[in-house]
Amino acid sequence: MDDINTTANEITNDNVNFETRINLAPLLEHVNQIKKELETVIVGQHKMVDQLLVAILSNGHVLLEGVPGVAKTITAKLLSKTLNICFSRIQFTPDLMPSDILGTSVFNLKNSEFEFKQGPIFSNLILIDEINRAPAKTQAALFEVMEERQITIDGSAYQLETPFLVIATQNPIEQEGTYRLPEAQLDRFLFKISIDYPKLEEEILIIQREHLLQDHGKLEAIKTILSAQEIKGYQALVKQIRVEQNLLEYIARIVVNTRENAFLYLGASPRASIAILNAAKGFAAIRGRDFVTPEDIKEAATPVLQHRVIVAPEREMEGITSIEIIKQIIETVEIPR
Image 1: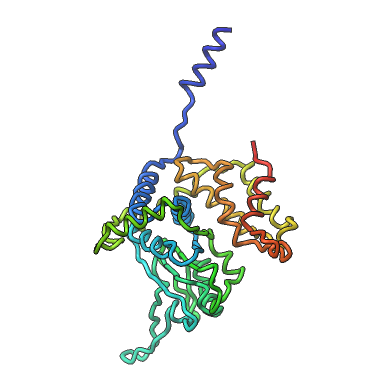
Image 2: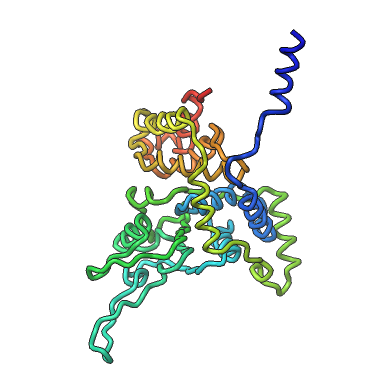
């Protein structure tokens, strides 16, 4: 009996190897460095920062929603400063045309031929400010580029350089002069991140930092952490993270439940299942794990699903939100053991 106990102890304490199969140390180091740089300006909002980093690692686009003044635009700018990639900012307005974003063909008098002049969308990180200010025609111009990372103009296809990430902002309150994003376009965003007001302690710290800045700009001291090549390497690394079969089924059950829920008029599509899978891998990576857990899936589910489902009109009139319904679905679906 003593021999059996000794053997069990040896197996438990000495022989079990908890090292990850994938070397995530460089990724974790860079993630922590980026967080440190962002935290020099952004107070709180740790969940938002994590979700933005996961979006980069998962090669997905982000929709930031919040009232004016909660650091939506400055966060995107700060993030771009930590990455050694091309950055473009496009301010959406009601008079913006698709050619203002994508580019247009211009006749060259020297060679008597049309030449394509690239628009601001030809970049690596795109900040689209107030995406719901532009009309539907201009919004629709983003469909192909966001999904396929290419643009087709005058019968010619133009591939965009990778990495390619769109961060769009919108104000959920002021709807006058805006054009609601169609469900087909919302589905192109990996995450919808809702930004709340800061707490009292955070508000005080924001004011203190602004006072201490004096004439110094917020972006001046931000260091560059990642190159385009490193981002692409980490994106490929995250895809290798292990996901057990029972967790794949767990994702499927959550998404299918949105289609069968009486409180929802429209459920999520299979694209949402894939988005949860990719985002869960990203959350596992920034936590230093080479395998996905149910907690990673839970953390990914709400920002992935909240903009992909439509609340039934009678429930919406009662003040029930998509976030509340999604959280209820997550709680009711049995967690794999």
